[in-house]
Image (cartoon, rainbow, N blue to C red; front, side, top):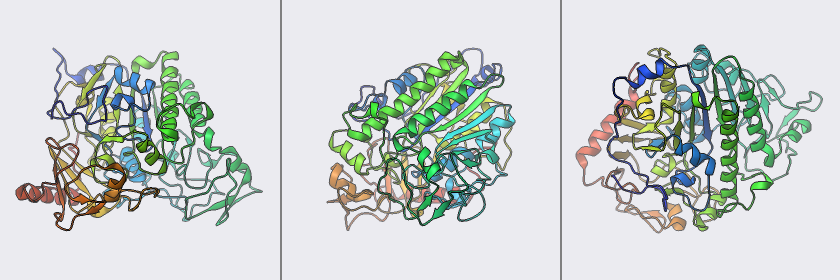
Length: 524
């Protein structure tokens, strides 16, 4: 598919197709890396950032100069995917190297839910700590706390990130659109006053006050809620990340920075409001770009950028909520020209920006069409720090260091993708994408203006083309499932299920094997 433009109105041509292999005379990539100092690693995981949300991926209504600089100095991937199109399952995969179906995860969790990762399981935090790194998790957690259901926010929040290998945690415990609307530092709510406890089923007083979208509520704790101010969350997380990086002096460090940008509600700080041509949605992207820029500047100021691997990516595709709809009507294409949005099995739900910079190891200004996933980050970090994974570790994580550096062929040959609806779990194998049901498997909103507009109904707004969809509904004569040739048809305009019955059967059989198997990745 060389020369096919994935992003909308690309200033940089983004293509996918045959693997690109680069070689280095006289030495292998692995030998070169193992002979060097252990690099610092900064992993920035944005929230709901779509494939078309960055100017380096073709956006024209927003301008992401700092993230663009990261791409200019590193490698940009055009066929990178989140293992899930949903926030919590995606984060589970990133931290554990396992597909979310192994935990039966398909939906986000909320304020009452306990920690969903076994504290005995290898995580990327534990791996890096055992490899001699200082480790921190700053930002959105969204993987639960403690063992007691519902979570008692008046007590120590344990186990949590610290029990999974992180030396330090500061961040938003759930998601910025749902309670408890507080910050947590290590095991405790910031600003908590035991004389003013949290109380379930009471409405919280937050700054600024806004209508909540959640089903469950938790009020009280006025002092703790007062610390959390919507328009200051991005700045607060940036400050904590910068402070922590500056405190690292004696050991290599690993930072997992999970921003709340650009998940709704869109609450950029005042200096970013009105700065984009994509409404408040685009303004929130501009704040994200600033956060990334501040982190990069800190690495420069500390003179550690040359020995730091920076990975920037997203947990899933962009969401067509109210802010997303307004941005679309302003001409901004959240996921470029890809079909679908957050929660979907269609490409827009899980094809994500992925940029890696490592001076001297990753070719500057390069683009790769290799198939990779956020589930691969753990095994890749293990390779970089020479950590020996066990058979029970990172069962679905491929070491994609060759793809990052461009010094070898593509490592991953398939990918299992989990949308919101388990019946729509998809298989990517080579050029083919197989979805075992009709529709997207994502949001069910039916009309323009719905917060959860998605699936076939989204066509009423987007006017995109798919052979199964007419007037926002699935055609009566549409095939019972879906098969797309992404090499010939990257935007999924034609379901070729009926044309390739042998491929359908092969894909169905393969998917069943992967879902029933103990692991899908090779043991290092």
